[in-house]
Every structure is written in structure tokens, then in C-alpha cells.
Length: 67
Image (cartoon, rainbow, N blue to C red):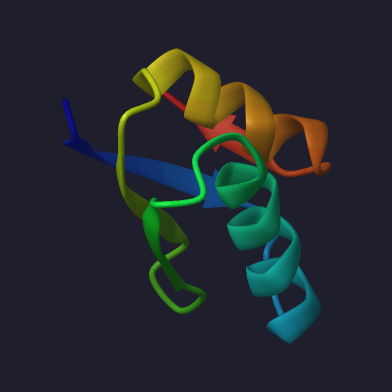
């Protein structure tokens, strides 16, 4: 089942950040639709992964996920 997860993330500032986060999520859910908004500091993913796992993947890339 796919759900949309939206996270507020600090530390993203460029295309590399977008790629890193997108690839990390898609590595575990290749069908995920990931949208990163650098200006707003958000990551939105339509994914089968639970919110906690998406947050952990973003954090593993070095970005601070806010609750």
C-alpha cells in the first residue's frame, strides 16, 4: 500500500542533496515517487515504506529530519 510521507528536512541546498535523498528512498522502494523542495525544506514521497523508514533513510544521507 502506498502512502504519501512528507518530512521537513534541514541541510538540503543543492541538486546533489536532491539526488542523494531521492536515490536513498528509491533504493528501497524503486516505485517511490519522490519530490524534494529545497526552498521549503521538504521531502515528499509516495511510497510503500513507513514514515519512520523514509525519515531514517534521509537522516542516513546526513540531513536533519524535524518532527
